[in-house]
Image (cartoon, rainbow, N blue to C red; front, side, top):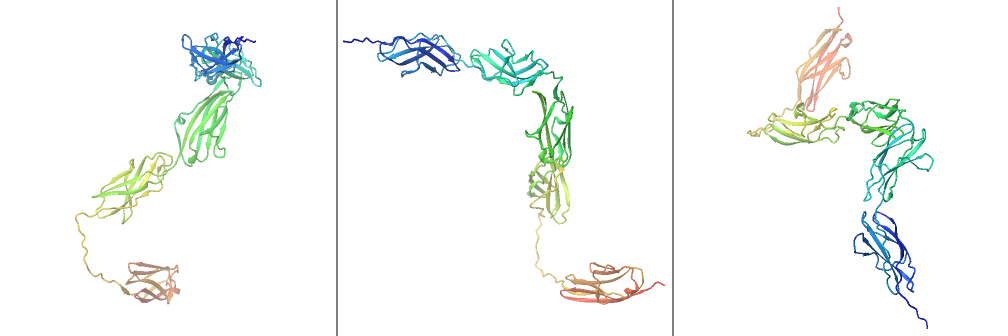
Length: 511
């Protein structure tokens, strides 16, 4: 007969917290020495805030491992934890409570680590506090340096630095060193902030500094086609490295020329175009120290014409003209408009407004019975637009109070065949003296005139100049010679008939 006495197990032993985080903790323990005569099936865990009597269960199903991660805790609050062992008979007594612990996390990395100064044995660093500090606060900062090409980080401070700045001393002269800064609190070290470029430990006589001329501290304006020649002095020893960029991109060396010296830099554009407008960034730097300046360049030209010019309203001797700003402002603010009017009969343009700011105007003192067109020039700092915007409709100034009665009458027919009112007269002239033959003709429609010499058409002969002034016909003969003696005739032709007159011209040699 075998009798086996079984019982609940003893409590787990050596219960402790091995590591903590912002809201978590790792709990470990060892199995009980006596399992109650039955195998251990698992464990139950509880936790509570220090000083409280209320324990909170962490699991409702038995946990078989010997390591447990407790989560969803409050950072900065003290906790205690305990563990129960479970077998087939039941649950053990609780283990000893863990030592009080606090969930806490290291800070985030320090921000904006920069090199402020360097000499032949020292380097001065500055930075900003981490974004996330948490309940643990910051005990201080650890500054370390490492020679280029090695992985050995050497502490530069023996005690933690509380402020966000430190001068590392006793550095090896001539070496290139990387620097990093780590924030430290009760939870440990943060991720380090590291300088991206190595620092050469040597004395810098003069820090880089750009001396931006006063006229470049505001927007620099040039017209299309003009030269851009910017001379910008700077200082720094040894000679700083100079870099240019436009809107964050490298410059095009085919269009923009850069020349650097020990004390200034020159940006030159032979012929400015609109696309050269933008923000040009000049940077001068020595090692990790840098100075920057932004130069705003705007290339402008004359604007386009005013858009959609319309006569909106006509009353009395006035007309309201409206328009829209030009589609192209020439890369410059529109400073005003110039408005002109023209009578439809003459189309002679007269200015009625200059430098007008609104996009509408009232034109007064128009003449009754006339019809007017309007045109609008846009204006910016370069001047008036090349072309105007012309009104799509007209302003017709009606005669008020008058009624135009049209009478029915038969229109007179002025059509007639050509008839000479004044004939040609026989003439005798002296050779070498310009002479003229004259006659007068009437006819409707206006007749075509043909001058002839001995029945031969004179059209196109440069010696003979033909004129027709309201039906008075003249044939000028330049410096006639005896050879020009002949019978001259003038023929007038229209669709209703024709008429001819003739005369004899005798040219005598001078006596």
